[in-house]
Amino acid sequence: MATQQTRSLARFMMAPSVVLLFIWMIVPLVFTIYFSLLQYNPLNPIRDGFVWFANYKLFYSNPAFFAAILNTLTIVVSVLVITVVGGILLAMLLDQPIWGQGIVRILVISPFFVMPPVAALVWKNMIMHPQYGVFADIARFFGADPIDWFGQHPLTAVILIVAWQWLPFATLILLTSLQSLDGEQKEAAEMDGAGFLSRFIYLTLPHMSRAITVVILIQTIFLLSVYAEILVTTNGGPGYASTNLPFLVYQKALLEFKIGQASAGGVIAVILANIVAFFAMRAVGKNLDK
Amino acid sequence: MARAVTTQHKTIATAAAWVVALLIFFPILYTIITSFKSEQEAIQGFNLIPSGTFESYSEVQQQSGYFKFFFNSVLLSVGSTILALIVAIPAAWSMAFSPTKRTKDILMWMLSTKMMPAVAVLFPIYLIFRDSGLLDSRIGLTVMLMLINLPIVVWMLYTYFREIPGEILEAARMDGASLWNEIIYVLTPMAVPGIASTMLLNIILAWNEAFWTIRLTTTNAAPLTAFISSFSSPQGLFWAKLSAASTLAIAPILIMGWFSQKQLVRGLTFGAVK
Image 1 (cartoon, each protein chain N blue to C red):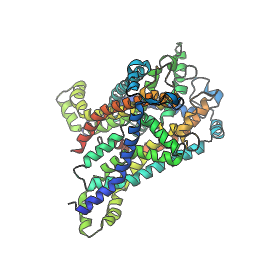
Image 2: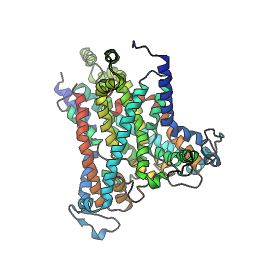
Image 3: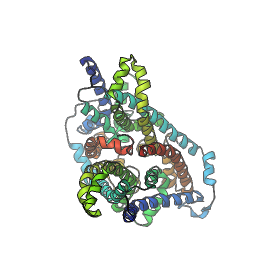
Image 4: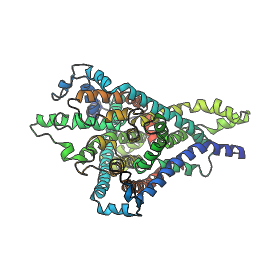
Protein backbone atom coordinates (compact mmCIF):
# COMPACT_ATOMS: atom_id res chain seq x y z
CA MET A 1 0.00 0.00 0.00
CA ALA A 2 2.90 2.30 -0.69
CA THR A 3 1.87 5.75 -1.73
CA GLN A 4 3.94 7.95 -3.96
CA GLN A 5 5.03 9.88 -0.90
CA THR A 6 6.28 6.90 1.08
CA ARG A 7 8.02 5.59 -2.00
CA SER A 8 10.07 8.70 -2.52
CA LEU A 9 10.73 8.77 1.22
CA ALA A 10 11.98 5.20 1.00
CA ARG A 11 14.32 6.20 -1.77
CA PHE A 12 15.54 9.12 0.29
CA MET A 13 16.24 6.83 3.24
CA MET A 14 18.19 4.39 1.15
CA ALA A 15 20.22 7.03 -0.63
CA PRO A 16 23.04 7.52 1.91
CA SER A 17 23.90 3.81 2.08
CA VAL A 18 23.68 3.31 -1.65
CA VAL A 19 25.67 6.41 -2.55
CA LEU A 20 28.38 5.74 0.01
CA LEU A 21 28.83 2.13 -1.04
CA PHE A 22 28.79 3.06 -4.70
CA ILE A 23 31.59 5.60 -4.24
CA TRP A 24 33.49 3.21 -2.01
CA MET A 25 33.30 0.51 -4.66
CA ILE A 26 33.72 2.35 -7.90
CA VAL A 27 36.30 5.08 -7.24
CA PRO A 28 39.17 2.88 -6.02
CA LEU A 29 38.35 0.17 -8.54
CA VAL A 30 38.56 2.58 -11.47
CA PHE A 31 41.88 3.83 -10.13
CA THR A 32 43.19 0.29 -9.79
CA ILE A 33 42.21 -0.66 -13.31
CA TYR A 34 43.77 2.54 -14.63
CA PHE A 35 47.02 2.00 -12.66
CA SER A 36 47.20 -1.58 -13.88
CA LEU A 37 47.71 -0.29 -17.41
CA LEU A 38 50.58 1.97 -16.40
CA GLN A 39 54.19 1.65 -15.62
CA TYR A 40 54.11 3.70 -12.48
CA ASN A 41 56.86 3.86 -9.90
CA PRO A 42 56.87 6.85 -7.54
CA LEU A 43 60.55 6.22 -6.81
CA ASN A 44 61.59 6.15 -10.46
CA PRO A 45 59.15 8.33 -12.38
CA ILE A 46 61.28 8.73 -15.50
CA ARG A 47 60.08 5.51 -17.10
CA ASP A 48 56.44 6.02 -16.18
CA GLY A 49 53.90 5.71 -18.95
CA PHE A 50 51.09 3.82 -20.52
CA VAL A 51 51.99 0.18 -21.13
CA TRP A 52 48.56 -1.38 -21.75
CA PHE A 53 48.61 -5.00 -20.72
CA ALA A 54 52.32 -5.48 -20.07
CA ASN A 55 51.68 -5.78 -16.34
CA TYR A 56 49.30 -8.64 -16.93
CA LYS A 57 51.84 -10.46 -19.07
CA LEU A 58 53.99 -10.73 -15.95
CA PHE A 59 51.55 -13.32 -14.73
CA TYR A 60 52.92 -15.64 -17.35
CA SER A 61 56.56 -14.64 -17.15
CA ASN A 62 57.15 -13.84 -13.49
CA PRO A 63 57.29 -16.96 -11.31
CA ALA A 64 56.33 -14.92 -8.25
CA PHE A 65 52.89 -14.18 -9.62
CA PHE A 66 52.27 -17.76 -10.56
CA ALA A 67 53.47 -18.96 -7.17
CA ALA A 68 51.25 -16.42 -5.46
CA ILE A 69 48.13 -17.56 -7.29
CA LEU A 70 48.94 -21.18 -6.60
CA ASN A 71 49.53 -20.44 -2.91
CA THR A 72 46.29 -18.47 -2.71
CA LEU A 73 44.33 -21.42 -4.07
CA THR A 74 46.23 -23.91 -1.89
CA ILE A 75 45.36 -21.91 1.23
CA VAL A 76 41.70 -21.60 0.25
CA VAL A 77 41.21 -25.27 -0.65
CA SER A 78 43.19 -26.74 2.26
CA VAL A 79 41.54 -24.58 4.88
CA LEU A 80 38.12 -25.33 3.40
CA VAL A 81 38.71 -29.09 3.54
CA ILE A 82 40.01 -28.98 7.12
CA THR A 83 37.29 -26.70 8.44
CA VAL A 84 34.33 -28.27 6.65
CA VAL A 85 35.25 -31.87 7.48
CA GLY A 86 36.37 -30.94 10.98
CA GLY A 87 33.34 -28.71 11.39
CA ILE A 88 30.89 -31.48 10.47
CA LEU A 89 32.53 -33.92 12.89
CA LEU A 90 32.66 -31.36 15.68
CA ALA A 91 29.10 -30.21 15.11
CA MET A 92 27.89 -33.81 15.32
CA LEU A 93 29.83 -34.31 18.53
CA LEU A 94 28.50 -31.12 20.12
CA ASP A 95 24.96 -32.02 19.05
CA GLN A 96 25.07 -35.00 21.44
CA PRO A 97 23.73 -34.54 24.92
CA ILE A 98 26.77 -33.62 26.98
CA TRP A 99 27.48 -32.11 30.35
CA GLY A 100 28.61 -28.50 30.28
CA GLN A 101 27.55 -27.87 26.69
CA GLY A 102 27.49 -24.11 27.18
CA ILE A 103 31.10 -23.98 28.28
CA VAL A 104 32.22 -26.38 25.55
CA ARG A 105 30.59 -24.15 22.95
CA ILE A 106 32.32 -21.08 24.36
CA LEU A 107 35.71 -22.82 24.28
CA VAL A 108 35.21 -24.00 20.70
CA ILE A 109 34.02 -20.65 19.34
CA SER A 110 36.75 -18.58 21.01
CA PRO A 111 39.45 -18.69 18.30
CA PHE A 112 37.10 -16.86 15.97
CA PHE A 113 37.25 -13.77 18.17
CA VAL A 114 41.02 -13.65 18.27
CA MET A 115 42.29 -10.94 15.95
CA PRO A 116 44.40 -12.36 13.10
CA PRO A 117 47.75 -10.86 14.18
CA VAL A 118 47.36 -12.25 17.69
CA ALA A 119 46.38 -15.68 16.39
CA ALA A 120 49.40 -15.72 14.11
CA LEU A 121 51.84 -14.49 16.77
CA VAL A 122 50.59 -16.91 19.39
CA TRP A 123 50.98 -19.84 17.01
CA LYS A 124 54.32 -18.59 15.78
CA ASN A 125 55.89 -18.14 19.20
CA MET A 126 53.95 -20.21 21.71
CA ILE A 127 53.01 -23.26 19.66
CA MET A 128 55.22 -23.66 16.58
CA HIS A 129 58.45 -22.03 17.67
CA PRO A 130 61.25 -24.54 16.91
CA GLN A 131 62.86 -23.96 20.31
CA TYR A 132 60.31 -22.73 22.82
CA GLY A 133 57.01 -23.76 21.23
CA VAL A 134 54.70 -26.44 22.61
CA PHE A 135 55.13 -28.57 19.49
CA ALA A 136 58.87 -28.54 20.07
CA ASP A 137 58.32 -29.57 23.70
CA ILE A 138 56.16 -32.46 22.56
CA ALA A 139 58.69 -33.54 19.94
CA ARG A 140 61.50 -33.49 22.49
CA PHE A 141 59.36 -35.44 24.95
CA PHE A 142 59.16 -38.23 22.39
CA GLY A 143 62.83 -37.87 21.58
CA ALA A 144 62.23 -36.43 18.11
CA ASP A 145 63.75 -33.33 16.57
CA PRO A 146 61.45 -30.29 16.66
CA ILE A 147 60.18 -29.18 13.26
CA ASP A 148 61.14 -25.77 11.95
CA TRP A 149 57.62 -24.98 10.80
CA PHE A 150 58.14 -21.56 9.27
CA GLY A 151 61.47 -22.43 7.67
CA GLN A 152 60.57 -25.79 6.19
CA HIS A 153 56.79 -25.92 5.93
CA PRO A 154 55.80 -22.25 5.77
CA LEU A 155 52.61 -22.72 3.78
CA THR A 156 51.45 -25.62 5.95
CA ALA A 157 52.05 -23.50 9.03
CA VAL A 158 49.98 -20.64 7.62
CA ILE A 159 47.21 -23.07 6.64
CA LEU A 160 47.15 -24.57 10.15
CA ILE A 161 46.82 -21.14 11.74
CA VAL A 162 44.09 -19.99 9.40
CA ALA A 163 42.22 -23.28 9.77
CA TRP A 164 42.32 -22.88 13.55
CA GLN A 165 40.72 -19.47 13.17
CA TRP A 166 37.93 -20.66 10.88
CA LEU A 167 37.11 -24.07 12.34
CA PRO A 168 34.93 -22.45 15.04
CA PHE A 169 32.97 -20.53 12.42
CA ALA A 170 32.23 -23.68 10.42
CA THR A 171 31.39 -25.64 13.55
CA LEU A 172 29.03 -23.01 14.90
CA ILE A 173 27.08 -22.66 11.66
CA LEU A 174 26.90 -26.39 11.00
CA LEU A 175 25.83 -26.98 14.60
CA THR A 176 23.07 -24.40 14.24
CA SER A 177 21.89 -26.17 11.13
CA LEU A 178 22.15 -29.61 12.76
CA GLN A 179 20.04 -28.51 15.70
CA SER A 180 17.19 -27.64 13.38
CA LEU A 181 17.08 -31.24 12.12
CA ASP A 182 13.80 -32.83 13.09
CA GLY A 183 14.33 -35.30 15.94
CA GLU A 184 11.39 -37.41 14.81
CA GLN A 185 12.91 -37.97 11.41
CA LYS A 186 16.05 -39.25 13.07
CA GLU A 187 14.00 -41.57 15.25
CA ALA A 188 12.00 -42.86 12.32
CA ALA A 189 15.22 -43.62 10.45
CA GLU A 190 16.56 -45.43 13.47
CA MET A 191 13.38 -47.45 13.86
CA ASP A 192 13.60 -48.46 10.24
CA GLY A 193 16.95 -49.90 11.05
CA ALA A 194 19.12 -47.35 9.30
CA GLY A 195 22.64 -47.56 10.62
CA PHE A 196 24.72 -44.60 11.71
CA LEU A 197 26.45 -44.27 8.36
CA SER A 198 23.32 -44.40 6.21
CA ARG A 199 21.57 -41.99 8.59
CA PHE A 200 24.49 -39.64 8.11
CA ILE A 201 24.59 -39.94 4.33
CA TYR A 202 20.87 -39.86 3.61
CA LEU A 203 19.54 -37.65 6.37
CA THR A 204 22.12 -35.50 8.14
CA LEU A 205 24.28 -34.55 5.18
CA PRO A 206 21.43 -33.47 2.89
CA HIS A 207 19.94 -31.45 5.74
CA MET A 208 23.26 -29.66 6.29
CA SER A 209 24.04 -29.17 2.59
CA ARG A 210 22.76 -25.61 2.54
CA ALA A 211 24.73 -24.63 5.63
CA ILE A 212 27.81 -26.31 4.18
CA THR A 213 27.42 -24.29 0.99
CA VAL A 214 27.13 -21.09 2.97
CA VAL A 215 30.20 -21.95 5.05
CA ILE A 216 32.25 -22.70 1.95
CA LEU A 217 31.24 -19.52 0.15
CA ILE A 218 31.67 -17.12 3.04
CA GLN A 219 34.97 -18.62 4.11
CA THR A 220 36.25 -18.48 0.54
CA ILE A 221 35.64 -14.75 0.44
CA PHE A 222 37.73 -14.25 3.56
CA LEU A 223 40.34 -16.90 2.73
CA LEU A 224 41.10 -15.31 -0.63
CA SER A 225 42.37 -12.29 1.28
CA VAL A 226 44.43 -13.85 4.09
CA TYR A 227 47.01 -11.23 4.92
CA ALA A 228 47.88 -10.54 8.56
CA GLU A 229 48.67 -14.18 9.27
CA ILE A 230 51.38 -14.15 6.60
CA LEU A 231 52.67 -10.70 7.51
CA VAL A 232 53.50 -11.58 11.12
CA THR A 233 54.69 -15.17 10.61
CA THR A 234 56.63 -15.88 7.44
CA ASN A 235 56.51 -12.51 5.71
CA GLY A 236 55.78 -14.41 2.54
CA GLY A 237 58.98 -16.43 2.65
CA PRO A 238 61.23 -18.23 2.41
CA GLY A 239 61.41 -16.87 -1.12
CA TYR A 240 57.83 -16.87 -2.31
CA ALA A 241 56.94 -20.12 -0.54
CA SER A 242 54.10 -18.59 1.48
CA THR A 243 53.27 -15.49 -0.56
CA ASN A 244 49.65 -15.32 -1.62
CA LEU A 245 48.11 -12.83 -4.01
CA PRO A 246 47.11 -10.22 -1.41
CA PHE A 247 50.54 -10.39 0.15
CA LEU A 248 52.26 -10.05 -3.23
CA VAL A 249 50.15 -7.02 -4.08
CA TYR A 250 51.07 -5.47 -0.76
CA GLN A 251 54.77 -6.17 -1.38
CA LYS A 252 54.71 -4.75 -4.90
CA ALA A 253 52.73 -1.67 -3.95
CA LEU A 254 54.06 -0.55 -0.60
CA LEU A 255 57.54 -2.08 -0.46
CA GLU A 256 58.74 -2.04 -4.08
CA PHE A 257 56.46 0.77 -5.32
CA LYS A 258 55.72 -1.08 -8.54
CA ILE A 259 52.22 0.28 -8.65
CA GLY A 260 51.36 -0.97 -12.14
CA GLN A 261 52.20 -4.58 -11.32
CA ALA A 262 50.51 -4.40 -7.93
CA SER A 263 47.35 -3.04 -9.52
CA ALA A 264 47.33 -5.80 -12.12
CA GLY A 265 47.56 -8.27 -9.24
CA GLY A 266 44.69 -6.46 -7.59
CA VAL A 267 42.55 -6.73 -10.71
CA ILE A 268 43.28 -10.47 -10.88
CA ALA A 269 42.25 -10.72 -7.21
CA VAL A 270 38.98 -8.96 -8.04
CA ILE A 271 38.31 -11.39 -10.88
CA LEU A 272 39.04 -14.38 -8.62
CA ALA A 273 36.73 -12.99 -5.96
CA ASN A 274 34.01 -12.31 -8.49
CA ILE A 275 33.97 -15.88 -9.69
CA VAL A 276 33.35 -16.93 -6.09
CA ALA A 277 30.93 -14.10 -5.52
CA PHE A 278 28.82 -15.18 -8.46
CA PHE A 279 28.09 -18.50 -6.78
CA ALA A 280 27.82 -16.96 -3.33
CA MET A 281 25.17 -14.51 -4.42
CA ARG A 282 23.05 -17.22 -5.94
CA ALA A 283 23.14 -19.25 -2.73
CA VAL A 284 22.30 -16.31 -0.51
CA GLY A 285 19.79 -14.92 -3.01
CA LYS A 286 17.69 -18.07 -2.89
CA ASN A 287 17.05 -17.38 0.75
CA LEU A 288 15.40 -14.08 -0.09
CA ASP A 289 12.73 -15.72 -2.21
CA LYS A 290 11.35 -17.91 0.52
CA MET B 1 12.89 -35.81 22.52
CA ALA B 2 11.73 -39.24 23.39
CA ARG B 3 15.02 -40.93 22.73
CA ALA B 4 16.48 -42.43 25.85
CA VAL B 5 20.04 -41.31 26.39
CA THR B 6 22.14 -43.75 28.28
CA THR B 7 24.45 -42.35 30.89
CA GLN B 8 27.30 -44.24 29.28
CA HIS B 9 26.70 -42.60 25.92
CA LYS B 10 26.52 -39.19 27.55
CA THR B 11 29.73 -39.78 29.49
CA ILE B 12 31.68 -40.75 26.38
CA ALA B 13 30.29 -37.85 24.35
CA THR B 14 31.05 -35.44 27.17
CA ALA B 15 34.63 -36.65 27.52
CA ALA B 16 35.24 -36.46 23.77
CA ALA B 17 33.69 -33.01 23.46
CA TRP B 18 35.71 -31.61 26.36
CA VAL B 19 38.97 -33.01 25.03
CA VAL B 20 38.39 -31.50 21.58
CA ALA B 21 37.16 -28.20 23.00
CA LEU B 22 40.19 -27.87 25.28
CA LEU B 23 42.54 -28.68 22.39
CA ILE B 24 40.96 -25.96 20.27
CA PHE B 25 41.05 -23.49 23.14
CA PHE B 26 44.56 -24.50 24.17
CA PRO B 27 46.55 -21.80 22.30
CA ILE B 28 44.47 -19.12 23.99
CA LEU B 29 44.62 -20.81 27.39
CA TYR B 30 48.37 -21.29 27.17
CA THR B 31 48.85 -17.65 26.19
CA ILE B 32 46.87 -16.51 29.21
CA ILE B 33 48.88 -18.84 31.47
CA THR B 34 52.20 -17.70 30.02
CA SER B 35 51.28 -14.06 30.53
CA PHE B 36 51.52 -14.68 34.28
CA LYS B 37 55.00 -16.18 34.03
CA SER B 38 58.31 -14.39 34.20
CA GLU B 39 60.39 -14.33 31.00
CA GLN B 40 62.72 -16.98 32.44
CA GLU B 41 59.85 -19.29 33.29
CA ALA B 42 58.25 -18.82 29.88
CA ILE B 43 61.10 -20.49 28.01
CA GLN B 44 61.73 -23.34 30.43
CA GLY B 45 59.57 -25.82 28.61
CA PHE B 46 55.98 -26.83 28.91
CA ASN B 47 54.45 -25.77 32.20
CA LEU B 48 50.82 -25.07 32.97
CA ILE B 49 51.30 -23.48 36.39
CA PRO B 50 52.62 -19.93 36.30
CA SER B 51 54.25 -18.21 39.25
CA GLY B 52 51.51 -15.59 38.99
CA THR B 53 53.63 -12.53 38.43
CA PHE B 54 52.17 -9.43 36.81
CA GLU B 55 55.53 -8.08 35.70
CA SER B 56 54.88 -8.73 31.99
CA TYR B 57 51.72 -6.69 32.10
CA SER B 58 53.38 -3.70 33.69
CA GLU B 59 56.31 -3.98 31.29
CA VAL B 60 54.02 -4.07 28.26
CA GLN B 61 52.25 -0.99 29.51
CA GLN B 62 55.53 0.83 30.22
CA GLN B 63 57.16 -0.13 26.92
CA SER B 64 54.40 0.46 24.42
CA GLY B 65 51.53 2.10 26.24
CA TYR B 66 48.75 -0.41 25.88
CA PHE B 67 46.00 2.01 26.84
CA LYS B 68 46.54 4.37 23.93
CA PHE B 69 46.01 1.51 21.48
CA PHE B 70 43.12 0.15 23.50
CA PHE B 71 41.49 3.56 23.44
CA ASN B 72 41.93 3.75 19.67
CA SER B 73 40.42 0.31 19.22
CA VAL B 74 37.38 1.24 21.26
CA LEU B 75 37.01 4.54 19.46
CA LEU B 76 37.37 3.03 15.98
CA SER B 77 35.17 -0.01 16.49
CA VAL B 78 32.39 1.72 18.41
CA GLY B 79 32.58 4.89 16.33
CA SER B 80 32.46 3.10 12.99
CA THR B 81 29.62 0.88 14.15
CA ILE B 82 27.50 3.80 15.32
CA LEU B 83 28.17 5.67 12.08
CA ALA B 84 27.21 2.59 10.09
CA LEU B 85 24.00 2.21 12.11
CA ILE B 86 23.03 5.83 11.47
CA VAL B 87 23.41 5.33 7.73
CA ALA B 88 22.01 1.80 7.62
CA ILE B 89 18.92 1.97 9.83
CA PRO B 90 16.89 4.15 7.44
CA ALA B 91 17.96 2.06 4.45
CA ALA B 92 17.15 -1.26 6.12
CA TRP B 93 13.90 0.16 7.41
CA SER B 94 12.70 1.27 4.02
CA MET B 95 13.78 -1.98 2.37
CA ALA B 96 12.01 -4.09 4.97
CA PHE B 97 8.75 -2.14 5.05
CA SER B 98 8.36 -0.62 1.62
CA PRO B 99 10.10 -3.12 -0.61
CA THR B 100 10.10 -2.47 -4.33
CA LYS B 101 10.99 -4.64 -7.28
CA ARG B 102 14.56 -3.53 -6.99
CA THR B 103 15.03 -4.06 -3.24
CA LYS B 104 16.48 -7.51 -3.70
CA ASP B 105 18.90 -6.32 -6.36
CA ILE B 106 20.07 -3.48 -4.16
CA LEU B 107 20.67 -5.86 -1.24
CA MET B 108 22.58 -8.22 -3.49
CA TRP B 109 24.66 -5.42 -4.89
CA MET B 110 25.52 -4.20 -1.38
CA LEU B 111 26.65 -7.69 -0.49
CA SER B 112 28.81 -7.83 -3.60
CA THR B 113 30.81 -4.78 -2.51
CA LYS B 114 31.86 -6.84 0.51
CA MET B 115 33.46 -9.35 -1.82
CA MET B 116 35.95 -6.96 -3.30
CA PRO B 117 39.37 -7.92 -1.96
CA ALA B 118 40.90 -5.12 0.07
CA VAL B 119 44.29 -5.49 -1.58
CA ALA B 120 42.84 -4.68 -4.95
CA VAL B 121 42.17 -1.14 -3.84
CA LEU B 122 45.09 -0.80 -1.45
CA PHE B 123 47.07 1.70 -3.47
CA PRO B 124 44.24 4.00 -4.58
CA ILE B 125 42.94 4.14 -1.02
CA TYR B 126 46.44 4.76 0.24
CA LEU B 127 46.84 7.64 -2.21
CA ILE B 128 43.45 9.13 -1.37
CA PHE B 129 44.23 8.92 2.33
CA ARG B 130 47.69 10.41 1.88
CA ASP B 131 46.57 13.28 -0.31
CA SER B 132 43.71 14.25 1.96
CA GLY B 133 45.87 13.99 5.06
CA LEU B 134 43.86 11.10 6.47
CA LEU B 135 46.77 8.69 6.94
CA ASP B 136 47.05 7.77 10.59
CA SER B 137 43.94 9.76 11.47
CA ARG B 138 41.16 8.33 13.59
CA ILE B 139 38.48 9.97 11.46
CA GLY B 140 39.75 8.46 8.22
CA LEU B 141 39.96 4.98 9.67
CA THR B 142 36.56 5.24 11.35
CA VAL B 143 34.97 6.07 8.00
CA MET B 144 36.91 3.25 6.38
CA LEU B 145 35.72 0.66 8.89
CA MET B 146 32.20 2.03 8.59
CA LEU B 147 32.25 1.45 4.83
CA ILE B 148 33.69 -2.03 5.18
CA ASN B 149 30.97 -3.16 7.55
CA LEU B 150 28.08 -1.17 6.10
CA PRO B 151 26.81 -4.03 3.88
CA ILE B 152 26.74 -6.43 6.82
CA VAL B 153 24.99 -3.87 9.00
CA VAL B 154 22.32 -3.19 6.38
CA TRP B 155 21.80 -6.90 5.81
CA MET B 156 21.57 -7.82 9.48
CA LEU B 157 19.17 -4.99 10.23
CA TYR B 158 17.11 -5.93 7.20
CA THR B 159 16.72 -9.55 8.35
CA TYR B 160 15.70 -8.37 11.80
CA PHE B 161 13.32 -5.67 10.59
CA ARG B 162 11.67 -8.07 8.18
CA GLU B 163 10.50 -10.13 11.13
CA ILE B 164 8.58 -7.24 12.65
CA PRO B 165 4.93 -7.81 11.67
CA GLY B 166 3.75 -5.22 9.17
CA GLU B 167 0.20 -5.28 10.61
CA ILE B 168 1.38 -3.40 13.66
CA LEU B 169 2.55 -0.57 11.46
CA GLU B 170 -0.72 -0.61 9.53
CA ALA B 171 -2.61 -0.38 12.81
CA ALA B 172 -0.51 2.54 13.95
CA ARG B 173 -1.08 4.23 10.62
CA MET B 174 -4.83 3.69 10.89
CA ASP B 175 -4.76 5.30 14.30
CA GLY B 176 -3.35 8.35 12.60
CA ALA B 177 0.29 8.03 13.62
CA SER B 178 2.58 10.03 11.38
CA LEU B 179 5.52 8.31 9.78
CA TRP B 180 7.85 9.87 12.27
CA ASN B 181 5.76 8.75 15.24
CA GLU B 182 5.51 5.34 13.69
CA ILE B 183 9.28 5.06 13.66
CA ILE B 184 9.85 6.40 17.14
CA TYR B 185 7.02 4.84 19.12
CA VAL B 186 6.21 1.64 17.27
CA LEU B 187 9.18 0.51 15.32
CA THR B 188 12.11 1.48 17.48
CA PRO B 189 11.09 -0.45 20.61
CA MET B 190 10.59 -3.57 18.51
CA ALA B 191 13.80 -3.08 16.61
CA VAL B 192 16.10 -2.46 19.56
CA PRO B 193 17.10 -6.11 20.13
CA GLY B 194 18.03 -6.50 16.46
CA ILE B 195 19.95 -3.24 16.46
CA ALA B 196 21.79 -4.27 19.62
CA SER B 197 22.95 -7.57 18.19
CA THR B 198 23.95 -5.94 14.94
CA MET B 199 25.98 -3.45 16.93
CA LEU B 200 27.67 -6.15 18.99
CA LEU B 201 28.75 -8.24 16.02
CA ASN B 202 30.02 -5.26 14.10
CA ILE B 203 32.06 -3.95 16.98
CA ILE B 204 33.73 -7.36 17.06
CA LEU B 205 34.36 -7.32 13.32
CA ALA B 206 35.75 -3.79 13.39
CA TRP B 207 37.91 -4.56 16.43
CA ASN B 208 39.53 -7.49 14.63
CA GLU B 209 39.92 -5.85 11.22
CA ALA B 210 43.60 -6.30 10.52
CA PHE B 211 44.30 -5.03 7.03
CA TRP B 212 43.40 -1.37 6.86
CA THR B 213 44.02 -0.77 10.54
CA ILE B 214 47.61 -1.92 10.09
CA ARG B 215 48.29 -0.33 6.70
CA LEU B 216 46.73 3.09 7.21
CA THR B 217 48.09 3.90 10.66
CA THR B 218 51.48 4.51 12.19
CA THR B 219 51.19 5.87 15.71
CA ASN B 220 48.36 8.28 16.44
CA ALA B 221 45.40 6.27 15.26
CA ALA B 222 46.97 2.82 15.68
CA PRO B 223 44.61 0.35 17.36
CA LEU B 224 45.44 -2.97 19.03
CA THR B 225 45.93 -4.80 15.72
CA ALA B 226 48.85 -2.50 14.97
CA PHE B 227 50.08 -2.67 18.57
CA ILE B 228 50.28 -6.45 18.43
CA SER B 229 51.89 -6.48 14.99
CA SER B 230 54.83 -4.60 16.48
CA PHE B 231 55.65 -7.85 18.29
CA SER B 232 56.15 -9.70 15.01
CA SER B 233 59.90 -9.28 15.08
CA PRO B 234 61.34 -11.09 18.10
CA GLN B 235 63.00 -8.90 20.71
CA GLY B 236 65.14 -11.17 22.83
CA LEU B 237 63.20 -12.76 25.63
CA PHE B 238 59.66 -11.65 24.97
CA TRP B 239 57.42 -14.69 25.34
CA ALA B 240 55.74 -13.58 28.56
CA LYS B 241 55.42 -9.99 27.31
CA LEU B 242 53.93 -11.19 24.02
CA SER B 243 51.46 -13.31 25.97
CA ALA B 244 50.46 -10.43 28.18
CA ALA B 245 50.02 -8.13 25.18
CA SER B 246 47.99 -10.77 23.33
CA THR B 247 45.78 -11.41 26.33
CA LEU B 248 45.16 -7.70 26.69
CA ALA B 249 44.33 -7.37 23.00
CA ILE B 250 41.81 -10.19 22.83
CA ALA B 251 40.23 -10.25 26.29
CA PRO B 252 37.63 -7.50 25.79
CA ILE B 253 36.39 -8.85 22.50
CA LEU B 254 36.52 -12.49 23.57
CA ILE B 255 34.10 -11.72 26.37
CA MET B 256 31.84 -9.75 24.06
CA GLY B 257 32.00 -12.53 21.54
CA TRP B 258 30.80 -15.12 24.01
CA PHE B 259 27.61 -13.14 24.43
CA SER B 260 27.00 -12.80 20.71
CA GLN B 261 27.33 -16.40 19.50
CA LYS B 262 23.77 -16.64 18.23
CA GLN B 263 23.87 -13.34 16.35
CA LEU B 264 27.18 -14.36 14.87
CA VAL B 265 25.66 -17.21 12.88
CA ARG B 266 22.93 -15.03 11.52
CA GLY B 267 25.06 -11.98 10.84
CA LEU B 268 27.86 -13.78 9.08
CA THR B 269 25.63 -15.90 6.89
CA PHE B 270 23.56 -12.86 5.90
CA GLY B 271 20.48 -14.49 7.35
CA ALA B 272 20.93 -17.68 5.31
CA VAL B 273 21.39 -19.85 8.41
CA LYS B 274 19.48 -19.04 11.58
